[in-house]
Every structure is written in C-alpha cells, then in structure tokens.
Length: 142
Image 1: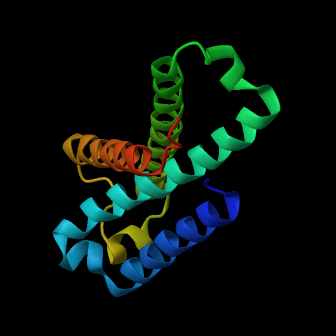
Image 2: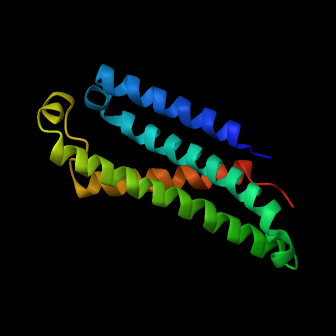
C-alpha cells in the first residue's frame, strides 16, 4: 500500500533534481532532459494519487460500492489517478507559461520554459505515460 510519506519523498526527489537541473542549465544543454522529468513527475504524482485513493477508500468505502466488479474498481481507480496527474500537469504548464511571461530577465538567463504548443503537448503526454506506468506498477491488486 502506498503511503503519503512515500509519495512525498518521491516528489521531493523529483523536485530536487529539477532544482539542480535548472541551476546547472540541463534543460537548455540537454534538450532531452525535459522528457524524463515529465515522465517521473507524472509517476510521482500518480503515487500521490494512489496514496490519496487508499486514504479515501478506507473512509468512504469505495470498495463496497464497486465490489461487484473488480474491473469497475480498477477503471475508477485508473481514471482517478490519471485525472489527478493530468490536473497537476496542466497546472505545471500554466506555471511555466506564466513564468515565461512575468519573469522577464530571469527567462533570458534560464531560457524559455514554454517554447511551443508542441512542447506543452509532449510534456502532458509524458505526464500521462508516467501516470499509467505508476498505476500499473503500484495499484493494489484485488
């Protein structure tokens, strides 16, 4: 069972790598670096979503409501996890967009966070793939 402690440690690790990557200019010098960061960002957010699912499941008794069909439970869990990750991914893309527009001289030094719509779609796709992989790997087996 995924616990919040595990999720927060994983998130902290990804954020720490992100801070170092920005500081060392990896997003500019290593153009491919953004892809695994979004994949692992989606992955760790999915771990958080699964911890939240487990916490809610105990309190709201989701299992009792969909217990007639394990497929329905898995589908509901997958939709919850992927939806949670995609909301976080969209919020992150908004952050990058706003950072580019309001940070001025910082953007000139660090580079543009949001170069194109294609980059945004690629980022969201990688978040999605990370969420699916985490859900398949960490979901609780019935």
